[in-house]
Image (cartoon, rainbow over all chains, first blue to last red; front, side, top):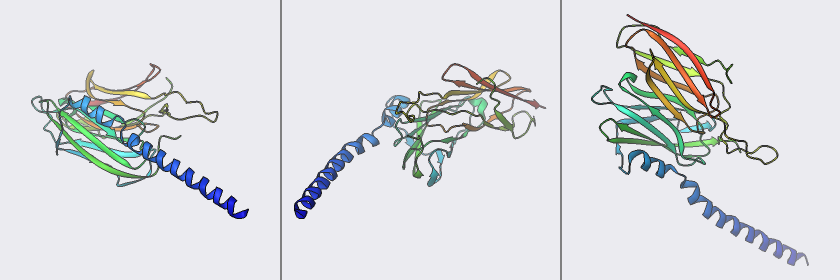
Length: 152
Length: 109
């Protein structure tokens, strides 16, 4: 009697485990595939951004995902002839990919901005800069999040 | 929300033409993401500041579009190149259409 209960329990646990695992399998790609890629494609008009010029400053480990300090700066003379127009910041592990978009002009003097963002979990944050000549540059950084933001 | 007073700090207010001025601003706002559920299990509707604009002497020098992933009580820091004396006006636009406005001024010599 005791054995059968144990066996049943064991089976139930195994079944639950399998269900959770399959759920996990289904959730994972969905979690990674929020609209980040789409947002970047829309922003660049399908072009792939080059590496460099953008520096994205974020902590390696964020203890509190509710408020993670982030600085984005882009190397540019910021003259009327050559300047950064927009910088898109996306995060691939949040419920939605968009974080913030900064708009610069030659009047900004320097393409640099700092704000505090929410990160739901450990994930990759990407900044894409658009230049006035139509070229794009990007940088990304992985941030480990100990306590997730976005509540819930 | 109209009574919210943003905290704005310019690193200096007396500048030479062409100098960079750093602006730091903090405003109180819940920045409700629209993803959270209350204790009854209902989604709390989204309510964020979705846009920030800074003008100097009426000319836009910097702006930003905020998504729900910007933290509560949003902080923003940026720079601009001083061209002429005038008011530095910072405006945050709420989802409900209201504005939060703060003002400082610079003197360019």
